[in-house]
Length: 182
Image (cartoon, rainbow, N blue to C red; front, side):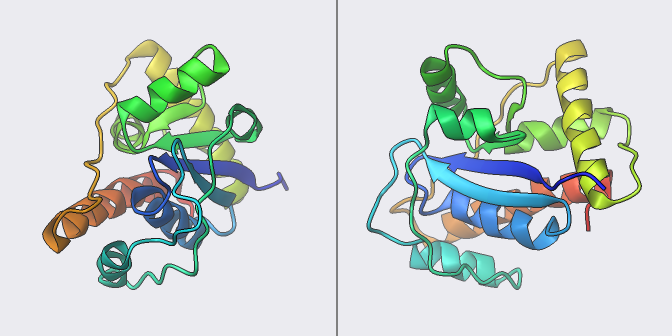
């Protein structure tokens, strides 16, 4: 059996979108992935916002105590899959790494690519996730999809947090179903 894939979720402060992506993927992909998150300008010393916690709770997801982590080029290099919230996060990675690695996708972009890609095969979720990563890279090379951003809900109303959480759930659910990860 293959080792669990290392999946890294990225947003700006690592207090709204990426923690929601992180803990939802950790719950859904537990057998397939070791999931972490980081921010390009991490709000160290803070925690996930109460608004994002409320939005996540609507999906039965409890965000545990969360310590924001500053994204580094080394973290990107060590990950098997990096899912970013926006194009600016991908540009930050490109600038820090020197190129945009083939294992970096926008969350919504990855879900869109999955709809076009072959279903990954494997004996277990770990193998299927590794196959999914390769399939996403292959379809992106053949028929690129634009990176579609998740809005930043920071300091906005609860409805914005709820909408962004719904988009995260929709995209992660599409990836989970496509690769049969849970």
